[in-house]
Amino acid sequence: MSDAFCVERHRADFLDWLKSGQIGLLLANIAEANALYETDDLDFACRELAAMVPTVVVTMGDKGARVITKGVSIDVPAHPTNVVD
Image (tube, rainbow, N blue to C red; front, side):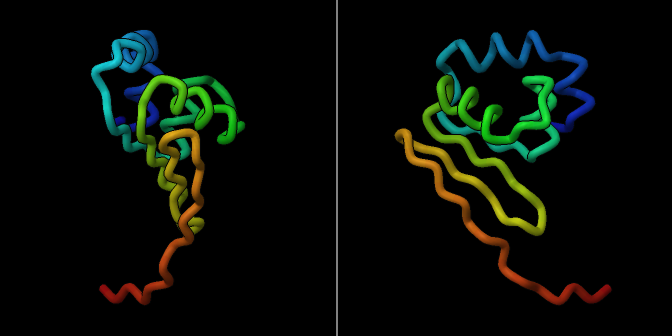
C-alpha cells in the first residue's frame, strides 16, 4: 500500500480503488492496514480488506504475516534470523 502517511493522505482514493474490484492481491503492513480504517484493531482492518480483495497479506514485523484468502485467515510466524551488517 506504500506507507501509512500515504494511506492517511489519500484514504478516500485507496478505498475507491479497493472497492473497484480490480485488485486481486493486496500487500500491506499493520500500520497501513490500520491507517486505512483509522483503527488500532488489526482484526477489524483485515476483515474490511478481505471483504473487498480476494487475497490480502498483512505483514506484522517479528510476528510474521497474516494471509486472508477465500474467507480463511492464516497467521504465518516469522522465521528467526540473525542479521549481520
